[in-house]
Image (cartoon, rainbow, N blue to C red):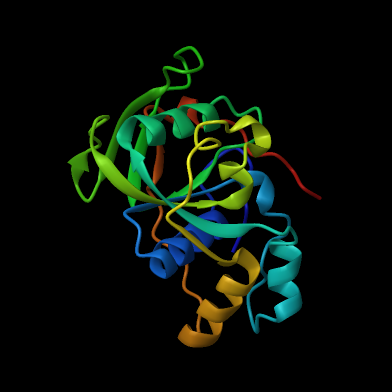
Length: 186
């Protein structure tokens, strides 16, 4: 599972999928900076997961309006702190647009996101508490506080016994040229 700070990544998608499954939420958002190492092929150890998710980040769940989800995604598309990783949604974006106006569409369960609609959102405690300038949820109380992300992922791997590559296509550039170049972590 590979991370990519400036685009959709298999590691980010896997962690977001685990968040979605554990919380029962409609959508999940994981911050790119919370992913610090790739998880190699082969036997996955506890150490591999702790290298990948070394921070004290918890899974928190909120009742969120569609407009709040859009705000979080638009902030992510500024790329100042990397592109957030998602589950439960397909986000099409246009990097030629100015910051704050890059989202072309967001689909949740095959339907367009309704800015006035209510959704159950799984998110990291880091984002919820305003980390990386994600201020959207700071004054809102979570409806549920869950486990450490690292422990949640370890539990998911133990339960499944096999890690499969997530299906790509969650963060979709409008044009191939909209895909920011990957950043090297080596």
